[in-house]
Amino acid sequence: MIGKLKGLIDSYGEDYVILDVGGVGYQVHCSSRTLQALPSSGEAAVLSIETYVREDQIKLFGFRTDTEREWFRLLQTVQGVGAKVALAVLSTLPPAELANAIALRDKAAVSRTPGVGPKVAERIVSELKDKAPAFANVDPAVVHLAGALDDQRAPRPVTDAISALVNLGYGQPQAAAAIAAASRSAGEKAETAQLIRLGLKELSK
Image (cartoon, rainbow, N blue to C red; front, top):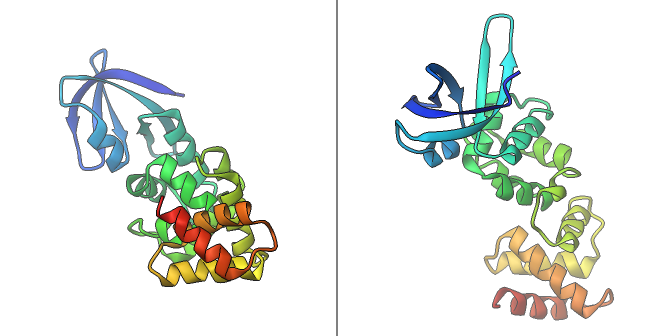
């Protein structure tokens, strides 16, 4: 199996690059983000590779980092997500943003991907929620709160405070992060009004 290729950029296609490695041109399919980040024709490039072997074809998928390749693999463990959809998700969200979105149960961010409807976004978030925090750069308290909100286990003052901030125009993940910080400083018995006030302070920092 091919795990990495290092060579010169020969040419670009719509969703692939031809990488010249010692005179052999490898057709490597990539996300649009990876393609945009690669250098011009004739310049050197290195790609982490995922090799797919089928009865009728061998297909190579290329990634700028091992983390991006890991997400490509993880996404395909979700029912209904194949290589094409996984690449589309990674074209829309870089690995760090994808990890944060899943950790925060932000289905709307995932469903921004063309071809990914609400049901598939829901499956991606719910099936990968336990793996995402390892890749995310989000406060664990916010991840914990996002899980509690998703499972309807969060205290009423917390859910009301988040709802109030969302009604003021803040995004759900942004509001949840602010209220998580507010409830940590105010304590478990904080009332909704106090949480909103502290949450707004957090958002204005």
